[in-house]
Length: 248
Length: 388
Image (cartoon, rainbow over all chains, first blue to last red; front, top):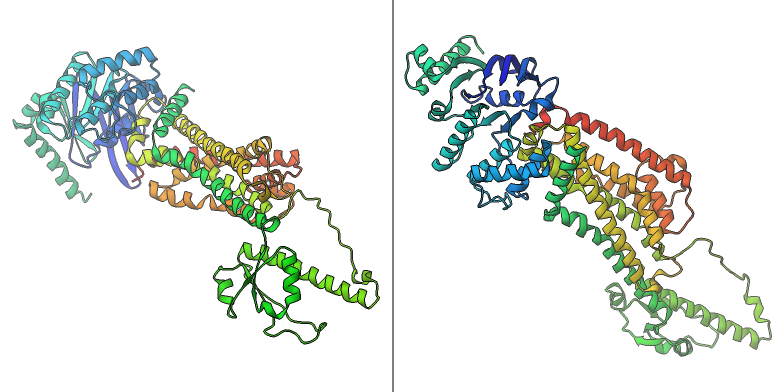
């Protein structure tokens, strides 16, 4: 479970995250959506402890990342927005490298790689070097890298960005399966249909704040709107108008 | 420790597959020894001319001084008649020098006559051949004088004002020793360049590609990651130095022996000692590379600085090669300068002071520690993850 309370982060004079509180529960997919510059990627970086918050607390399964960042990272698997593979390493060597960084033994890594190859359908390219991989293959390796240590909490930044229909579908199926195993999944996406189809809870972020939060059905009830895209537009435009009026 | 080893192994595997890393660490270091081999071979060729081959004397108006020509021919020289405007032949390198005699024979047996040598001191073969012909001309002059003194009934000893003898206490003389003193600057240049591609690609390159961020999302500290990368850079630098040291050894054992003259070339053990005194510089070079990667935002920017870096110690070596400085403890404390002095003494087979070696090593390692501390501190900054 990921619990965030009163989180704030600025870069110089630019306030990117302001007083954000949210909970991503176990056995649920939490969708974090927001317009460009809403602070989603910064939130991700704060949660995985590579950025230090100015204020607030982040607990990963009860572990405070500020006090024990390595323990917090052990509980996390992260798919960042930039997949950034090593072109001279094979897909298998990527998975092995990240498994070793998580302290897994050789046998554990081998059996885990075998599982991931089958799950992500990587048979054709597992021993090929990453140079020249298609976007789908890159995404699969990056996803495998995030899952190699079987993390309890999984964060994915735009997981289906640039993927074809079949691969997107298999990624969605995988996420549902992981959710059903009781894992906590936090994802961002620009594709509203994807968030609507996947997320059990939705958090709308705008101007560095949480402007709307709840299950899709709750949001529909609260706003009186049926289409999630309409809900998103209403919530983010209202924030933008308020910010404009306040001279921000 | 295991995280450091994991990063180290990954960087080694990654860069052993990288053509540029291999080129910089294993092929570029061969250039220095190859260049010196060519220079030694050239010097050797010139020496051979000096010692054994017949002297060819390009001469203008040979008919004006038949005695002199006969004398030169009796010394094994061959005359090569040249036209009046011989300067162009010398400046163009067609002949190494020219001996210009008067246009008409000097009237009378004992009247002096002017001999002019046209030489080109910018060419090594001209210096050697001119030296040989001057020796012959001086000897001709002495013999002629001896003949005249004898004819006048005077003792020929009055010609000897000084009896000159020379005792060499240095190990060597001539161009060969200058070439040997070029070995340390080459080694220092390699120290600062051998691992540079690995250092940059695994730090600023990884940051630029975005994979450094993904790496830091794992349960590892930045210090562990940097130490692993530093380890791989050190191994590649050592590899480059080893390749160059072996190449120098092969070069010194394959150049013509006459090109070395009196110089005793450093043997394998002495060469190993040369390499070992400069080992602390490996750490200094890699620490500097890490520091530069921490303060730059792109590979291109870092390459600009690191391209200039080897020139600083290389320059010190070149200055020392041309104007030898006495080894003093204060100089030993200057990293790269102390090592250049030490390596120079070693390649010239001179005695070296263990205290000097110790001061050099400690000063260099202390500087390395300071640079590493600074680099590690800079890598703790948040913006290091997002160079752009």
